[in-house]
Image (cartoon, rainbow, N blue to C red; front, side, top):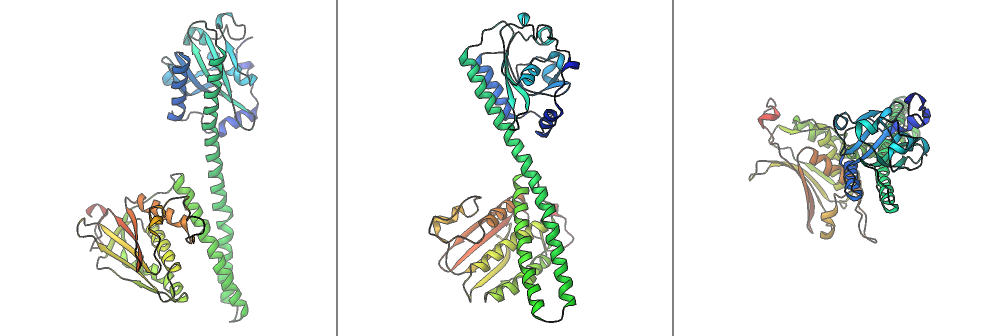
Length: 403
């Protein structure tokens, strides 16, 4: 059978599925390279490949032992591909001696790449589309044993697991975009209409209902923001821009938001303005950090309790420390090492914290700014302390690099 690539016409759906994996023309990855190295070692073959086959070529997602110039090119035309046949049939392709096999004996891979013995296992997506092959190659005729084919199938399954994980991640990113667009936009519209109704309605029961609607909507807005932040952090999409921020503005915004909330819960919020004028940080992210910690402290303070927010320069290191403290019941010592873990929950029967997800996000945002966060808890108070590596400044005109 001829291997002329003009006669190889894959279904458009298969090519679309292949491209959706995002693997074509992607960089080498250790997860795949480890598998081809393992195949070469276990099967004692000089060449092992993870190939992806599109309309005109085969692309090597991973290649162990491939000669130049093919190793650097990371692809060959279909005139040099045995893998295309495994992809076409969707079944393992086992060849003892390519010179004697009618399917491939005219294939230029024999002459140019030294492919003589070949064993290829198709790589099939959950959709059923075959996108490539995991193959082992020898330069001399070879009878592949049942055990060797079984080993190759296991390695191919591992390669497919990696591909499926990438597909799952891509789908999650699509969900992230959907949440961002399809939830944030209507929430914003509801809030704008609440504001419009409040300005048009006279003081009445209706206005009270508008206030309730706005509070509920802002709760939804905060939840969506936290979920999106969690996803962006996981995907490495959060960018941090360090700059000199006016401490007065940062703490002032905190006071505007949380003093009314604390008063409603009969908690005193004491925000102590520091002597320093500026702080090197990402203003948006630091606002999120302080808002999460302050809301958490108010939530867990008893009636008549005190929440204190302060900033200081640590004398021993010269680093900036911002702390949020509350009075009230302590956090059990056994829980402290786990508070910032992503999936940790208190043991059954113990009271859950308001927002374990929020604390994990806080810790990640702090670390993204080269900072550290710690928590201490005694019978009298609990304190979360954020330490930043950049120092605070006394002049609004200083640049971050001067700190």
